[in-house]
Image 1 (tube, rainbow, N blue to C red):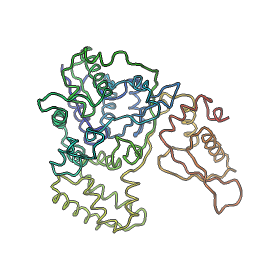
Image 2 (cartoon, rainbow, N blue to C red):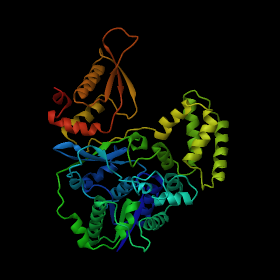
Image 3 (spheres, rainbow, N blue to C red):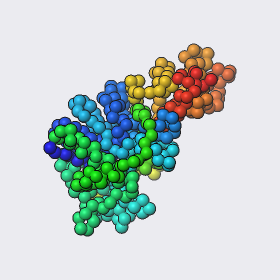
Image 4 (cartoon, rainbow, N blue to C red):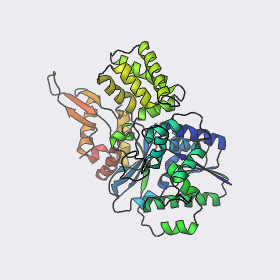
Length: 469
């Protein structure tokens, strides 16, 4: 009987590729993933043809939908790749984190939040410390010792931008053991009581899987948790930590998510600087830098800005020179940024804004199938969106309606009714240059948290028409 631990960064193309390759080589008979156990029943939907990441698990309290939590996944999430692998092989796949039925029962769990992951491997440490302070953050200290100015760039070069991956996890586990160990080799205690209970519950589920007779168990979790899960802890100790905890009834479903909400700039504490760059690394594991520079040139030419093959050649040369000067193993995001600014932007900020919005963030909205468990009102909204051909998008789009046309009138009524339900998918704008009152101009942008508002509004009726009366 063997347990294989895969410590990952929750959003990372290198980790995701490594997990996929490692599971293919290992062929486990059980997969355990850091995540909410309440969502075990909706795991098979990860294979549905209409499921398009980024998506999120939504765990909520049916009687108080505002008490909810999102667990976002991108295609380059290691957990997403593990879910799909397990479902495709018809293996037992389970989430092992502390249930949200316990966590949402706490008095401070009253607002919607994005909860997966708690922290990336580079974000553990004293929360009051300055970012990348080597005195308080051991990973920042490792990054500085390796010649990097910040831990995120170091982690990207070390893990996310590499292709030789099968030996990766032993190195990550050894590094995290060092990070979490005292001078005498003993493991440091968890940061707080919640972390202690989370790790205790994960160990309990791993024990249960062993007791069931599984011989090749794969555990996918945040890298920081690996030492604690490998630690030999008495079963009674974990049981005592979890005994008598208050629980509350919860429900689980899938909801669309967006790249914009995965970014640090959105305020998501476990976010990443550039979801678009990570998606690019996932799609182009080889020669990613050259593909990125070609994408920059294509974007600028699309907007009638100067970008020729000569620009690409010079940017590649500059990028290679920066790699050599900085003693990097390969061109990373910062080298590409510097090369793009120097060669393509010519001191202007318009190209930079375009690159940030359409390549670095590349805001896109995922999709979930209609087979997803939904309350009547969210299902009616999804059906109307499909019937009216109004595909939700994360970025702002303009909808120009002529109310003399029946289809346009239906779209207008739909958007007005959603506004009455406090779901402002569309906002009206002043129509200029047209006479008559039959024109409407809308700006549409779908927010993932509208999923929670639809659940809340379900009390008013099972359809948009009934709920908005």
